Length: 308
Image (cartoon, rainbow, N blue to C red):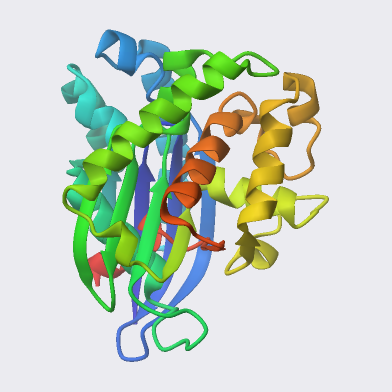
């Protein structure tokens, strides 16, 4: 058994997992799993740089996580940074800050590496289930990018494209409610990104769609009618296309205050969830998916297993 810590720093959030890994049994036992909205990617699509206030929010979360890791006595730590830090001109400033706080250098991974970790984390528990036929299409809808991965026990093809809930919200500034023109513009970006993904990933061959990350889990929580966010209820829930369509329509047609009042809604997702839901709906329409299997296990779990 090895006690490991994994950190995933994305465009919208930074997340920590401290777990005991049992390589012989393939079991990963959570000790602490938490998420903080830091919006590291604030303005990156427009300026090409990480904003000073976004860096400070991220470093504050890193200081909190350093204390948690020390408390649990994790033997090994891996810090992975994704879309926003790949795109930023001043990412060296980000790297130096993380190194000073946590003692490890963040690995600014490629979209393909991100996809590999996500696939491993999401599908490790699903292999062998006859009700979820392979190949899987794992879709990880992040803040700045979305990863498409097709595979069985292992990745067969993967592609990262620059669509995400934060990036699309900043690019098209959807109002509350969103206008038809704003919705069409977001859809057009998602369709163009799907065209790119299909050049290398055979998404039409997938028999089970697996959805990851906060936009997907929030949509699932709303569809399930939860009063508060419940990871156990959301993990491996199967949400139908009709449910996703209904929730997306509601989010696009709601005001900021109406979205903020939803029980499962994290405050940091209120302004970006409508775009994230529309990404999921557009993907399901494109591939003809009847439902999506929602996974709470994702890139964090994949990072943790990569340490072992």
